[in-house]
Image (cartoon, rainbow, N blue to C red; front, top):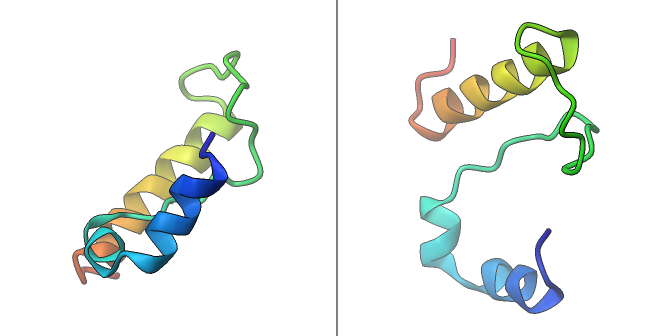
Length: 61
């Protein structure tokens, strides 16, 4: 989890904004350690990450 000063720095740092891939957490808690490979939650997170990378590198389908 980010601290408020980290978020504030990110919001004002153009360099960080250009080199950071923002990936949706799909509403899944960052402390949900019981996600099984292949489960619906796993697939949601996987697809979210894959789409974010494609968007970041300008390779949207």
